[in-house]
Image (tube, rainbow, N blue to C red):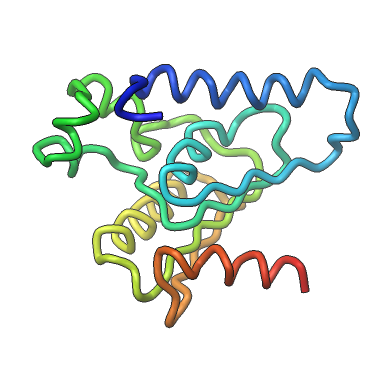
Length: 153
C-alpha cells in the first residue's frame, strides 16, 4: 500500500483482484463492492467493472486535489496528472450500477464535503442510480459497524 506502492499500482491491483474473482468458477451473480476510506476511493475508481452489481462507498476521498499541497502528498508523491487521473470526481464515464455513498455526521468536514461533492458530481453526469446519506452520530470508524449491523439485520 501507499506510500511504498504508487497509486497506479494500487489501482491496477484492485482491478486485477476484481478480474481474478470474475475468472473463477464461483457464483457471482451479485457482487457488491463495499469500500471504506481509501477503499471507497479505490472502489469508486472501479465502479464500471463488469463483475459488480452494486456498490457502497463509506467515508471516502473522491477528489485528490485538496491533498496536493499537504503532508500526505509528500508521502504519496502524486503528480498533477496522477491527481486528475486517480480522482473519482474527474471520471466522466457514467456509472451503470446502483451506488450508495455514506458518510458519518461526526466525520471531518472534508470527508463530508468530499462525499456530498462526489454525489452531486455523479448526479450531474446523469447517474440516476446513486444515493447519498450522512448518518447522524456516526464517525469515520463507527460507520463500518453501523453499516454491517444494518445489512446483516
